[in-house]
Amino acid sequence: MNNRQSISLPDASLSLVIPCYNEQEAIRETVKRLRQFCDEVQDLNVELIFVDDGSRDCTRDILKEFAAQDPRIKVVGFARNFGHQIAVTAGIDASSGDIVVLIDADLQDPPEVIHQMIEKWREGYDVVYGTRTERPGESVFKLATARAFYRLLNKLSDIPIPLDTGDFRLMNRNVVDTLRAMPERDRFVRGMVSWVGFKQTALPYIRAKRFAGESKYPLRKMVRFATDGILSFSTKPLQASVAMGMISAVMAMAGIVYAVTLRLFTNIWVEGWTALMIAVLFIGGVQLISLGILGEYVGRIYNEIKGRPLYVVQEYTGFTEKQPTVSRSPVHVIK
Image (cartoon, rainbow, N blue to C red; front, side):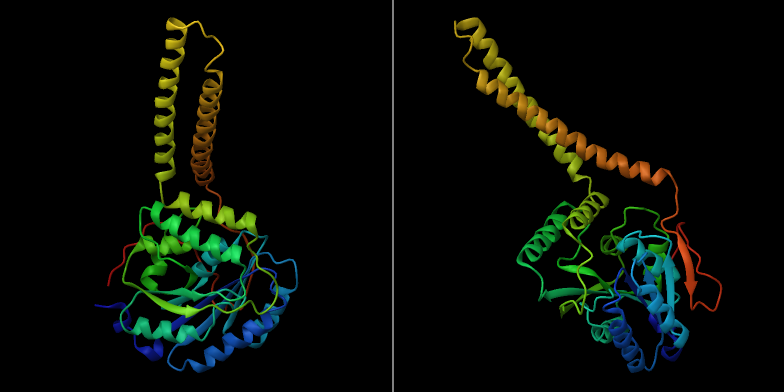
C-alpha cells in the first residue's frame, strides 16, 4: 500500500529543513515567508527546522528569538561550521514529518513552490525535486560551470542524476529513513536521493535572486563540491587513469623502438631528444594525475574508517521532546 494513502491528511506532518550560514541579512524575511507558507497549509502539521552551520554573525540569535515565539520553529546549532551538505543531513536527522522538504535560507528557492511539490506527493510520488529552468542574478561563469558540472556528473556517475537540480526537494518518510541509514562522510545529498530510488519526478521552477547577502559557495567550495559529487558516485576517474596509463605505455614503447632504431642503424645521437623529452614529461604527468585520483579515493577511505560523527551539535532549541537520534545502520522499508 502506498505510504501517503495510509496517512490521514489532517494527521500528516511536514518538516521543512533549512540550513543556514551567516544569513542574518536574509533570515528574518526567510522566517516570514516560511511562516506564511505554514499558515497557508491547512491539512498538514508543519515544523521548521533551521540548522545553524556555525554562523559567525547573529543568525542563531535571531532564530532562537523566533523559536521562543513560535513552537513550530526549531533550531539545531552546530559547534562549528561543518558544511552545507552536513547541515542538510543534520536537519534530516532531526525531522519527524511524514514528508520532508529541503530548502535553503537565501530565498532563491521560493517557498510557494512547495505547494506544488505537495500536490505531486499526493499524486503518489516519493520524491519531488525542483529543476531550475531560469537562474536570474547569477554570473555567466557560474551558470556555465554549473551546467557543465551537472552534465559531466551525469556522464561519469554510475546512476542517473537529474540535470540542473539542487537540494530543493520533497521526500517522504521512507526515503528519509533510507538516507539516515547511509553513513558516508563526503555527502552529496542530491546524488544520494537519486541512488535510493523510489518513485521520483521533476518539478520545473524559476529560481529567484538572492534576497540579501552573498553566495556561500565561492569557487574553491564549488570545486570541492563537484569533486565530492563525482568521486562519491563513480569509479570512472580510476578507470580513466588506467586508460591514460595504457596510452602512455604504448607511447613509451614507441619511443623505445625509435631510440633503439636510431642507435643501431644511424650515426645520429642528438636527434630524437625532443621526442624523448615529450614522452618523459607526458608519462610523468599521467603518473601524477593518476596518483592524485588514487589519493582522493584513499583519502575518503581514511576519513570513513576514523569513525568520527558527521557533526557536533552545540545546542537544540525548540525541541519539546527528546533530542533527535541518528540512525546509521541499514533500514528495511515496509509499505
